[in-house]
Image 1 (cartoon, one colour):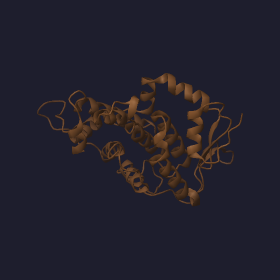
Image 2 (tube, rainbow, N blue to C red; image 1 turned 135 degrees about the horizontal axis):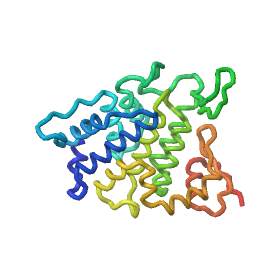
Image 3 (cartoon, rainbow, N blue to C red; image 1 turned 30 degrees about the vertical axis):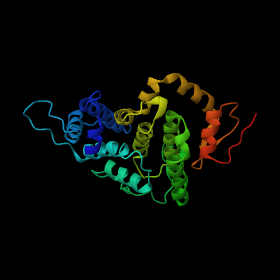
Image 4 (cartoon, rainbow, N blue to C red; image 1 turned 90 degrees about the horizontal axis):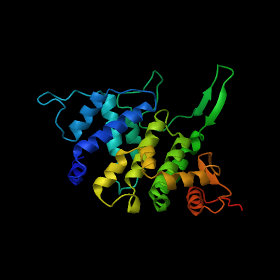
Length: 272
């Protein structure tokens, strides 16, 4: 954290970045319909960024373990951006996310992959359930995560930054590697991908990379919507994930889309 603070330039300011991190924390919690106390979130972020309390002379409010863990997760996901992402790091993110324990009454594995039971998304009354999604089986999960991490740390870096962030999010959610918190961890993974953007999309300054990590994917798309929407219009009908592996067919002249899909799956079929 000290290294990140030292690298911030005067134009950005700690207050601005702290406000963005606070907003991202609230938005990430909202994925599960949870409303965190904004004052607690602000207090946790302000303490880490060495900012004064909102009311001069008064102490910062003590944040809950849940808030502290979520803020730590978001900061960790955008730290050490030049280091490869590992499964051990994902486990630490998961442990941070559930620093206060499980969200509900159901016991979950914290800081470890899900168990052997099928990971399914269902709806409907008992006995009349509708299966909407089933994640890859547990026995193939380590191999599938290795494929994802190898892609994230290597070939994917050649892609457009927003494209890479979106594909990483989709792939991780498809694997659903943990008992709970997969959507929130996918958002953290997206933040990391955005913070690693360099070149024409983000000026090559450390503060800009940190700013990219503090913004959610939707905000980044709003900053430059046209090329992103054009790419998704071309790719969305043809891009799918099955069994944790991306496949694509009939890309019809979209080089970037074909490149992305072939990186995700070396057996991509390209039709005419």
